[in-house]
Structures are given as C-alpha cells and as structure tokens.
Image (cartoon, rainbow, N blue to C red; front, side):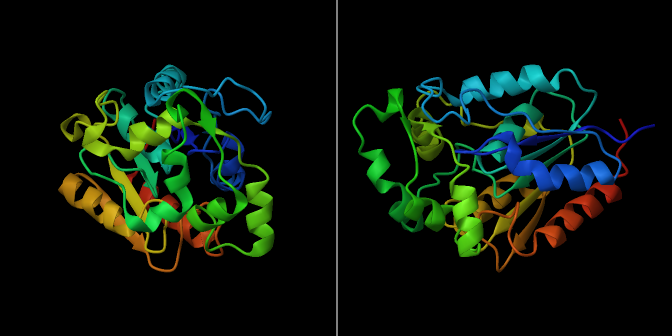
Amino acid sequence: MNKPDIIFIHGMFSTGSVWQAWQQYFTDAGYTCHNPTLPGHNVDTSSQEINGKSFDDYSQFLSEYISRFTKPILIGHSMGGLLAQKLAQHHSLSAAILINSAAPGHIFPIRLQMLPGLIRHFFRWRLWRSRFSLSEGEANYLLFNKLSPTDKLTLFNKLVPESGRILFELGLGKLNVSKNNRIDKTLINCPVMFYASVEDNIIPISVSRKMAKWYGGKLDYLEWPINGHWLLGEQNWQQVIEGVELWLETKQLRS
C-alpha cells in the first residue's frame, strides 16, 4: 500500500507556490504532493477574475479537484484550513492538517488584535463585489510579523489580491447569512491535527483556542509559542513540518 497523496491548500492573498518548501519535504519523504491555486488567485494582479469570488467557489473547485484522489491528506493554511474542514465533511480523507486555520462560522473571529491590518478594508464601498490587497505594513503585521525584513519583502511581493466577499464571509462568524462558513463536525471522520501560533495577529490565539474547545476530542491541538501566522516558513519551519510528518506516521496512513 502506498502513502496517500497530499493536497496543500493555500490561504488568502496567496497561490499554491507558498507550499514549495513543504511540497519538496514531503516529496522527499515519499509522498506525492499537489498544490493547486484557487480560482482567481492569478499571479497577474491586474486580473479581475477574483472579484466577487465566494467561499463556495473555492470549496467547489477543491471538491472537484480532490475527487480524483483516493483518501488524500489535506494540509490547509489559514483560509485553506477552513476549506480543509469544509471538504472533510463530504469526502473520504486519510487526514486533515490545519495550520493557523480560520475558524468555523460558529466562532466569531474578530478581535481587536486584528484590526490594525484589516479595519480600513471593512469600510470600503462595495468591497463585497470587488477585491482588495494588503499594504506592505498590513501584511507585515498580519502575516509576516515573525519573519526577517528580507523574507517579509520577498513574500509580500508574491501576494495577490483577494476577493472582498471572502473577508465578510469568513469574518462575520454567525452573522454570515449564507452560512457557508459553517462546519458540521459530526460529519468529519478522519484524523485532524490543528497547529496554532500564540503570536498570530490575523488568527489570534484566543480564536484558535475556542475552535479547539469547540471540536473537543475530534482533533489533536498544538500551540507554537514563539510563532506568528506564517508557520510555513518562519525560522523553525522544519521543526513544524517534522511534527506534521511524525503525526502522520503515528496514524499509519495508507491509500
């Protein structure tokens, strides 16, 4: 029996390329890896394709994508973590690993800690139908606060615009009338690991702790005390990824 395929799911403002180091690590470990880019997340930042994209658009795209694989492993970062939870309700998976994951709609996610990087966008006229980008200062505060100045600039230059609709769908919790941010945890039957960072400014640790408490015994939960949001590439990223690999090995997963 072979190891299951791994499908990496990126977060807001990103493309599948953010997983390059993780993909290489797990490829070397004997996994077949895939890092799709979500609809509208074009490297061409002038594209209008992202305008008005919804969380349902992303989850439908991924649902069709992962249907080609037999019991894959999903590894999702930030918004990608919530997408992994959404998919785990309706697909047979070997495991789901959530890295600094956005919270299900049952948990109101807005905290004062987030506002310096997001507040101006909530007041933009008709953002629901448009797109938005983070300024360098906002990105450094929300996403890259634990990276070196060089790494901050490199990663900032790779960010792409995000759908304004997503900001409201993920940010309003139970107030999202479409309810597409809700998760029925009783439908998730695969092992789930959730990594959270104490110094994360866009997914504050209080939100992650509420999410872990809401799931209860349905997931394994671990906090990284010195890390921020970008667990994918902060100074101790290899320690993080080795922890993921070890957890997968303890589950003895086979496709």
